[in-house]
Image (cartoon, rainbow, N blue to C red; front, side):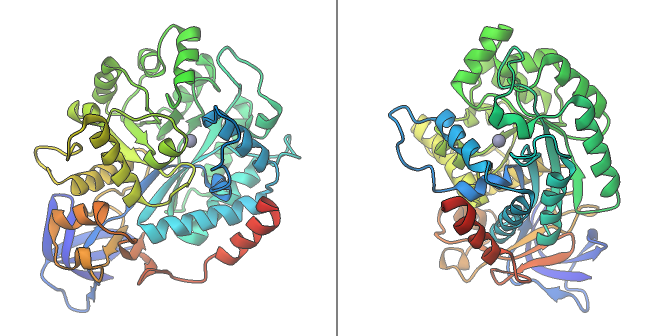
Length: 450
Ligand SMILES: [Zn+2]
């Protein structure tokens, strides 16, 4: 297939009047001019966004925890409520919720998702085979048509010092052997599927011991990405200092060979030394601004990290919002508010903030999802978003200013069409195919709200 774009954001920047040739879902050639029989794309074309942190099942609870249960409401009281609600879900429910989440991602411009999957079993079957829950999530992604980097979570303990897991955490727990066996089975089942890749996800320094982390990182070493939660909460940082005598990122960098395959999710609480040392590793800081704001986590030192040439990507995490536009806008706004200045997240090469944020987050996010995505270039997947220039704020703009306006100035979803791996998934702002929304709403009514 061939597609003609009047305007397109290629790896080297904006270009005009290009034909993109696609074979088996991959871009094989980009030529100037309009080739014969090329399908004309309906607006400016940009690479699809990588969502590098998702807990799909948490979508079912959004909006239900926005009331003050006590004066000290925090991440931890939110987590208690989330644990109680997840007891109600079975594997079929997880499939429906995940498909709905992935459809929402596609509609809003995400084309790849890294799923940090820890609900391995139903609460009433904590000794069951965890394969079914992983497959429920993977099949949801395949049906929706989003690229998935499935990252099963390894979880052992409820706190530093090998504290036994709480009963609500039993569905998350594997032995190391069970965990490796799960991944090996999944890898062989989906070995030839271009829509599915894998990463490992040791949950956090509090849920995994030093020996387990070393074992997993070595076992997985040649294969692919490693995602973990790192420093989301001050309490977590303090407990790490109490136990290891070092802060989480400080400890991790001293004790693991952290490199470009690592994604440190919620690297929220960093001191200046951690900022510069983490930036030097080339690892990705996984920032989830909407969730981090919703949970009252804190503000990631974005200005300092970008100044140190650190790499970041974004995730929708709890799915309180599924919009890369909102994530990037809030990321910049947290920096403006804390520095009391404007236009903080950009570079000398790309001073346009919306444009910088989109390009950086797609490129860097791609580094930790084991898929050839992140920029539109020969050899990469045909994963792209067509922007809607019927929106008045976008109608007369081009190039960098188009993305600046789409991130900061548009009140609606600016996505018109979405292609993943050479297949249209969204056209004129609507899913191709029926979607799972009706089943999802029924599930909410029957099992979550009542
Ligand atoms: Zn998370």
